[in-house]
Length: 273
Image 1: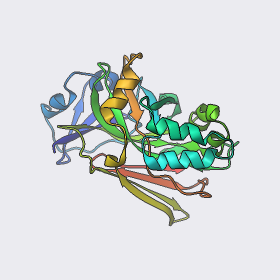
Image 2: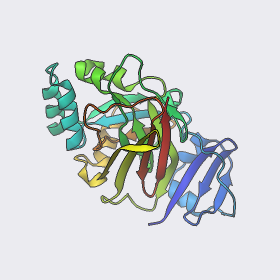
Image 3: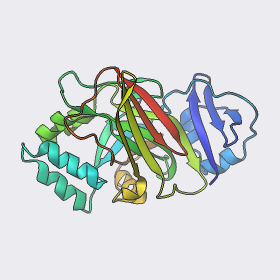
């Protein structure tokens, strides 16, 4: 399948083809990624030998939203963390409900790009990264590309009460995103894999892998619910949920390195502050 990677760099927007050739394009990020038929436009560019500048977080005026409990493993994890508070039945119900769980995750201010530092809350003792395929929906409400998301989550706060979910999910440097925006000739295959490794003091302390085929809800369904009553003049990112959740009592520590890989997008590497 033919693909292009779009990077936001210190000098502007750069597009890379599958041969590694690069084209620097004029205009700002918002304008470029929201043009109609983005893949076809990338296909018409003139590429040459060049290097991608240091990639930044691929976001400007876009919001970041997230869908929860879209995988069975996520449902089980949410039920485990909230059992003591009696909130476990909520996650059981939302997994089977017609309407998905969708929540606000942040914006450029809350986001962290490749090589950056994500954070864990100081008032939380149980924190995990959540690797997620992330959809880019343009200002016309069309699924136009993909990226990698790291939905940093405070599981103890989330489990204490379902109404605390915004505090468990939305805080400074809680939304990892990158390393690029991938545009494709056709939708990603269901066999597309997501993997995550957490490295601590030079040693791997967690590894997990799954396929996006394990997601209960379709991408089209999630896009439909997000855009029903909301407009996004600059487009929007939507994290689609996770199936890779470290078992308790695992919790992140400062200095941990989180590696999330989704091919053909690439690998998002970030450090825990």
